[in-house]
Amino acid sequence: MRQKVTILTILVGGLVFLSFFIVYGDIRDRAEITRTQNLSLALIHSSYASEDLNSQTAGYILPVSEPTYFPIRKSDVPEPLLEAKSFLLYDVKNAKLLFSKNSRQQLPVASLTKLLTAIVSLEHLSPEAVVEIGQESMNIDKEGADFYLKERFYFKDMLAAMLVKSSNDAASAIARTIEIKTGSSFPDLMNKKALQIGMTNSKFLDPAGLNDSAYSTAEDLLKLTRYARRFKEISESLTKPAIDLFSIDKKLPHHFVSTNKLFGVLPNMVGAKTGYTDGALGCIILEEDLSSSDTSVIAIVLGSTERFEDVQKLVNWSKAAFRWE
Image 1: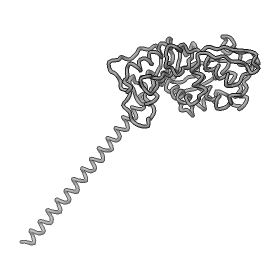
Image 2: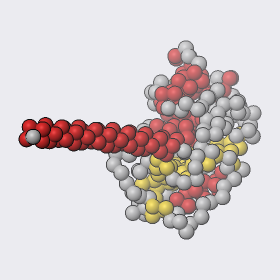
Image 3: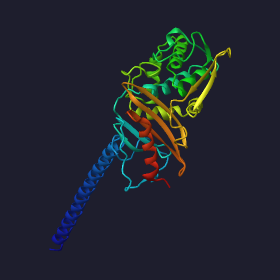
Image 4: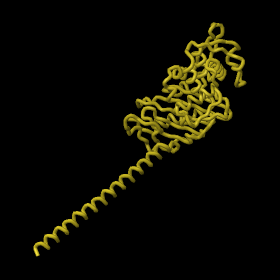
């Protein structure tokens, strides 16, 4: 009898032990499934958060070195109404997209193209390189020539004319100089550089931006602007309301006024590049320091009948609609 009880006890104990492992294994498997599902949902949410750049709310566009809760949106300040087809507003320090509309829409960008032309030319020419005005670079926009035939300039001066006055003739002459030097088509060099920068939704057809079949997006232009900021020659030119240039022989002076009408209007403006064609309408890229915080904002406006008003609205809204510290 005692032997039967012992055997029964062993069997019951074994069944309990086996049941424990079955239940434990099921719980562990369910936990692993739940963990995997949660991870998948987190990844999906992260993907949507990074891709939804066209929403009217703020979102991350580039990674930051450490997390930040600023700027904080003030809910009582309404969003501005703009005329632009596409725009974005970007917080440089915190790498945050604050506000946008159609930021991935492909549109002609007119003379904003010259930022890319400047980058490509700075990577191929020294400041003292000689640029000669050829017949193919005379009055290319049919609005009057900026220079005289066979005039010769240092590249650094032609770069300034291209960025300050937005001279199409200067852009053409610079591009032609590089084509002769490299044997490559300048638009090919532009598109190659654009891809290196990460501008995957853009196509450029000429150095001045006159061809409205070319296109870019506000998002791609943000990448271009961030890249251009590393060149002091570009940054310095975009801060000048006017320049005076001489040809190399010092015989012919030239006075050029900036196409940017916001000098004196936005006192903390870091710099800006404008653009306009009948197809592109008004375009502008502008950076403004925020005096209340250790950061700046980049505003990009495309396809606007009121580009200067639109970009001011974005900049002023960034100051009113967010708490920065």
